[in-house]
Image 1 (cartoon, rainbow, N blue to C red):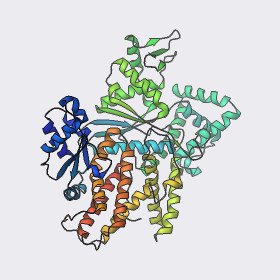
Image 2 (cartoon, rainbow, N blue to C red; image 1 turned 180 degrees about the vertical axis):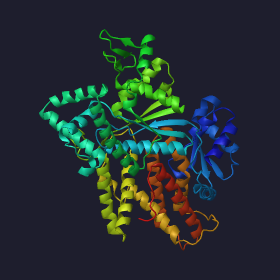
Image 3 (spheres, rainbow, N blue to C red; image 1 turned 45 degrees about the vertical axis):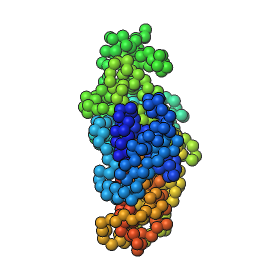
Image 4 (cartoon, rainbow, N blue to C red; image 1 turned 30 degrees about the vertical axis):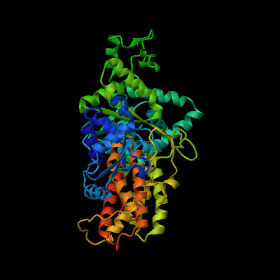
Length: 559
């Protein structure tokens, strides 16, 4: 219907505004009394040298014959009232199809997320990162993009050596297996132990730095320890990824590329884009960009971390020929990515225009910030277990199920609770995560969405075979649900344009609310319009399923 309105306006305005500008200008009025769509004519006043109200009135007469759409004017607005029965017919025919809401953007996208350090387990902050990265990947794919999901494992550096040193001195041959501790948690325990010991004896910090030097010089014993502990950490990460429904098409390792990129800096130095200090350090002057000076090569010739990111961005471009490259990284790295983009611009490389930092806010607990060095971080696995335990209490109290069924359902509900809670907040905002609120079966939560889906499934299980729908005169609750379902493609487009999963999350909640209001006020099975209302339930269920898939949430047929 919106496309029909846009096409008619393009035809009548004959090049006064572009088709893209017209489509963007079409809006949804704040009140149903003002129509289903509206087009403001104020932007045409200067072009046509007429009063906006006159323009609206003249356009109304030209658009009066639009099939299924009544046109009125209010002030300088054209108001479009869609034939609700015709809209309902379209919604029922389209919404259950796989193509409903899909688009064909056709761009090649590389997205990087997770990217953990291999000295400790994944934590709550990683869960927000993975939820965002996973959901944006799904939204992009749904919109017809060729998406490559990547992660960079930060598996070298002094922070890695801290865990290694603590294990070397205090491990006594223990392993995750004989300690019965998940392997990445096992490594993380030694990172906390190092920080405890270094507070008592500062020489531990010097020894960790010395161990890093041995690693860089290829000491066989240190390398063997590093490989062992790295594999413990990575193995544990992969268990969590699998549990959380995350996968990567390509994983990179800092240990493989940390020496690369130096030639990019030396080339920039030769071209006088970068400068050298008296002590031999190479830096880039970004004072004009208000980013200060950034050292790229230390006096001893070794490169700093940002240099490997320069290399990796160009490596990804070579491997995947991407149109855009997205980095899902917390807002504490805003400066890093501003500098990275500025360097690419100075070098005259198009990576500057193709890369984007999807900066997200930190996650805090009701008790305050988390601190990994002090061991007060909420580990991802522990949070999932705690949330599943809360869900289990609710499930066991509501349903007669086997222990295995309760565990399976509780885990799915917990993952839905966590993902939805992390995604419903705009990614740029710092948020507080409260497991007890997230797991509620009522209100703006993941379990509420699962419950709404399961309720629709229950209705359809009880129904007789669906016949070809006959569209009746719609009642208000039906109109509201039909319009909300019809909005799904627009919500997807908003989410794509803004790279924002919260758009889908908030739409899904509003959709579920509309359905539950419809269900409470309209009898479905046994009503005079049972067949139509069953079809409407199918449309709702299919659309909510698409939303949940975009959020990375698995549906449940029964709650």
